[in-house]
Length: 246
Image 1 (cartoon, rainbow, N blue to C red):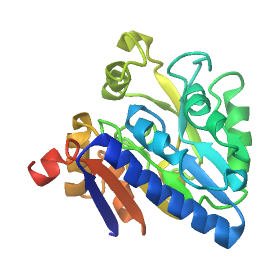
Image 2 (tube, helix red, strand yellow):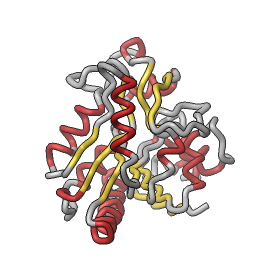
Image 3 (tube, helix red, strand yellow):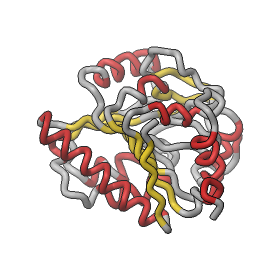
C-alpha cells in the first residue's frame, strides 16, 4: 500500500495542492512520452481543483482527456450533465488536444464500444478519481464489481448516491435523479499509472475514514485505491475529521 495523504486547512488550499500535483504528473508524462492521457472526475468536490488546474503551466495541446461517468438518458443541456460540467469548467478554458466524453444518450452500447476503443489505444497517465459519500469511485456504488474487465458499463445507482446528487444541488428531488449511469469500471480505473484523489468537505468524512481504515472490499469501493502503487489523496480538515479526530 503506497498512499500519500495531504491534508489542507480548506477546500481551496486542497484544490490548489492537488492541482499542482496533477500538473506535475501531466508535465512529466508529456516530457517522457510527448503527450499525456488523463481521466477526470466531476462533482462539487472538484470545483476548487479545476479552478486551480486551468491556471497551471501545462501544454494542453498535448493532453487527451477522458472522464469517468455520465447519467443514462440525461441531455447534455441539463445542469447535472457531466459533459456540460467538463465543457464549462475545463475543456472550454484550455486548448486541450482531445476530449472524449461519456455519452449517455442514443445507442448506449455503441457509445461504450467506441469510447473503450479510444480509451485503450494507449495507457492512462493520470487518473483524477473522486470518492463519493457512499465510498464509490466513479459510479461504482457498493457492492462494486471489482472483477469485470469491461472498461465501461451501465450501472444502477443506489439511494445514497442519488441523494448525494440532490444534496449537491444538481437535482431538486431524488425522483429527478436518473437511476442508471454509464461508469468506468474499477479495474479500468486502476490501470492509470498515477491516481490523484481530491475529496474535501465534511460530507466525505465517513467515506474517507472507511476507505483508509477498512480492508479492501467491494462494500467500500474506494478501498481498492489502496492497492494502487501510486495513490495521492488530497483531503481538507473537514473530510479528514474522523480520520485524525479533528
